[in-house]
Image (cartoon, rainbow, N blue to C red; front, side, top):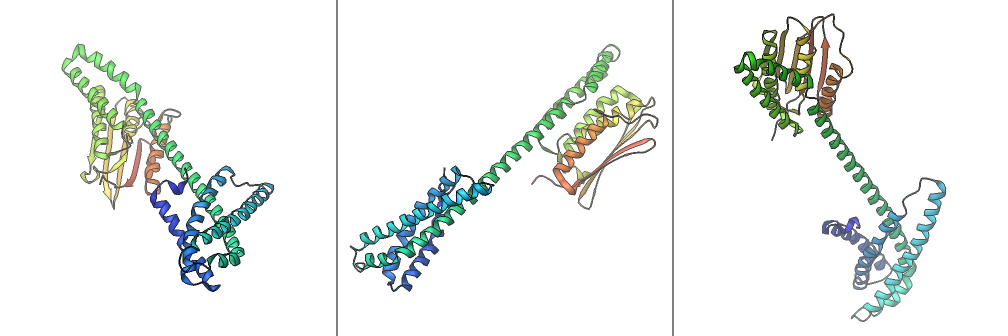
Length: 356
């Protein structure tokens, strides 16, 4: 469908654009000795007919896209030049017929003779208006292509984000689930009370993680609750080997961030840090608000002699977190990962944005 016909507002704007053209035509007629009645009686209906007649250029432009070659442009120029001559002549013919009809009205008896003398001027103006409508049609087609490309790009980005979230949910560390189930199986024989507690915690953790995974943005408060549920299970598994130091600034809790952004950091801290040490260690998680930015740190001990995990280990997890953080906040965010002699620290800095 023609883009100018999809809504009354667009069609109205297009028709209003012809009002100055009608005034110009009337002004030219006045300069040739016409009176105002003759000039306006012909100019207004003639421009309305032209507005409707020249709408057809859009369909021709759509059927004949602009060429990038010299030969193609030369051919199109010849086609549009010929079409402009024909449409200019047709517009002048409509002016002549309109003058014959209007001549029956009082005061307009001389209009056919005046139009007869002005036909070359009317034809020339019609040619220019037709070429202008061609240019407008190509601009509308270019705009439509740009909007379609933008829409498809947004759809692809959304699909990529959804796929990423599904991958993150699928990456809910299988080893964590296997180890948790094995620990649960062992506890049922020696400590049924703790086994039941672990079963409840595991169920709550899975429920929270699946619920958050359906959303693109969540409050930091919810991410922290998920992390606490995860760590509660891990504490049952590791016992005294896992110690926690959580310091959360309440002002940071409403901050919005991409879903499941914190969870991979906590999982990596356990898997690649504390779990690898016979004596375990302390996982430190802190948040603070500084000059309108949330600073989130996850720190864990590491074996200084152990090689840095590659492939599907720490490297991929951190890359995903970094990409999603910068994809959401751009240059307003910062990601830092530092491995010291016996400590590994990840720092996220992002602006405080909350739900309206």
